[in-house]
Length: 326
Image 1 (spheres, one colour):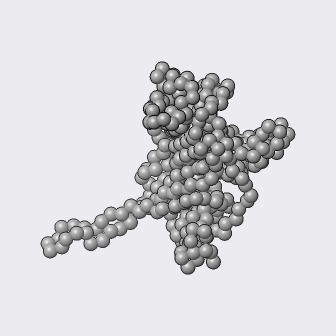
Image 2 (tube, helix red, strand yellow):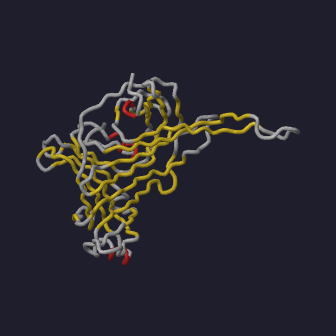
Image 3 (cartoon, one colour):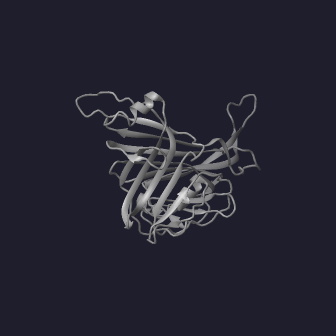
C-alpha cells in the first residue's frame, strides 16, 4: 500500500520488442510532474427523430494517448530517452581508460523503436492505479536551466494505446546525481568558445511524425516521420555583455555554431558528467535588447537550428559512467 498522495506515484519506461506490445517497465525516473492520458475517438449516435432532441449515445471508434514527464535530468540511465528521441542507439566509448563513457547520439529515423510507459497514480486510500501507454514515441524533449541551476527535462509522448488493466510494475531506483552548471558556446563548429553573461537557456528538440495514419479499427499504425523530420529551437537569456555574440549576428543574418553544455560532478581526469547539445548552424531572432530601467540591460534571444550539410542539424553528447545504453 502506497501513500495516498503524489508521494506514492511512479513513472517507469522500457523498450518494446514489438510495436504496441506491453513490456513491464524496468527503469523508473524520479519526477516533478507526470501524466499519461488516454485519448478516445468517439462518434455520437444520433439522427433525426420527431420529438427527440440531441444525441442518444456515443461509441468509441479508436483510442490513443499522450503523456508528459518533467524531471531533473539525472547523470545516469537516461540513454533510453535519448535513443527514442534521436532514433540512434549510441555505442558508449570509454574516455582515456577512465570510468567515463561518451554516448554520441545523431539523428536517424525512429521507426521500429517504441516504448511502454507506466504511471502509478495513488488513490487517497493508498491504492495505486497504473495507467500504461504502449506503442510509445518520444515526440519532444526540452532541456533548460539557469546558469547554475539544475538541468531540467520536459518530455512529451504519444501512445498507440493507454489502458488501466495492466498490473503495476514495482518501481525501483538507482543512485544518481544531477547536472548543475551551464555553459553556452558560440563560433566555428568544433571550435566554439564559451561566452559570459548568460543567465539561463533552454532548447527544445522535436520529432515530427504522422500520428494519425489510418489502420485497423481502434489501432493506429506506427507513426512515420514527416515534414522536416526534426526541429530544434530555443531561447538564451543573456546580459548585454558583447553585441558581437547575438546582436551583430542577428542584424547581419549570419549563422554560428551553438553549444549548450550542462556538467555535473567530476568522473575522472578531465571528464565530468555531461549533457551537451551541439547545433552546427543556428540563426538568432529578437537579439536586440530593450532598456527597462536602471538595471543591467538583458534580453531574451530566440534561436533555430538549420541543417549544416556537413555536420547535420543537431548532435547530442552524453558523458556518464553507463557502460551500456540504458
